[in-house]
Image (cartoon, rainbow over all chains, first blue to last red; front, side):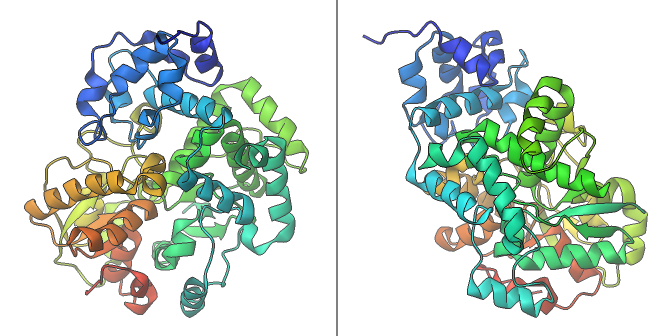
Length: 164
Length: 281
């Protein structure tokens, strides 16, 4: 028996997804969802489960990670539910509970290591040079003080702790 | 003409530097001044980073916005993901004073402050709205005859209620920007469908992402196009890398590279040697 968590909608709201309560289950979102056409993901069902406080069902499954954040659903929602914001809130809750995939963690670890989601490499450095561009872009990658400032932001918002 | 802080992001400078180079050359030719947004980081990526921690995403985005504000410049991006992140962050911080105060408490630790004034623009928006089609036409040295697929991606136009750039279901901006070169933008089914890469799908659920890409490629083929023109390095990567596995071979160019060709840049300067799907011009 699945046990509802009465505080779950408040938790979603605290993470920026308060509009979930406006959903009246018309299904326009699922009808237009490109992910729903090729996976078992049904965003309408996620919205309902969230409203009912079914925390386990929504944050522990794969479903909420099948959204590409394309906004087709939100564009068409007749109730102005900020659906991508709700999905983001659910993902934040999932991640805070330790549910993170390895592929995503790799991206997050790149961000921690170099301040970008991908690192530079020899082939790209050579091409950049050939194009008359500096080997490293003029970002946190090229300035240790800037990278230290960026690291501080990650540290202050608990990102390193979350990912590691 | 205005001057902008040039926000590079990750995929363009670190996977397709030809996009960065072409943008610099094309904007120079059109009289738009770009100043590097020095010390910037990842936007951060809306898919994975925002999904993991909205507070980290917002604070790091605010740092990028504050760096531009310090220079007194608005931001221009060449990526839908960067545009999505920075635009959304700027919007949220503009609308919510408490959120802005909270973020400034974090920024103060690194000697920065954001007062909420930075505007974030997409490079295609700047081309369409500020440079204008007529001026672009006048700068074309080599009119093109390609039949192409205009690939809008998602975060360029959506959410349309805050971006207010074009009709998100039936857009025309990119088609018109392409037509300015002489190339023809071919019609197709599901023109505004996602490439499949976003939201963390490419990095964790690659096979699902490729199913999106395959549907798009079939629609592009049926529409009669022989080249894909995107406005986002992440869509660019998804199509360029994904085609090999799917058995298609459409050359993929970022709009800045298409403009580079039409404005007489050499093929070498477009950086197309690193493209996985060969580009023959």
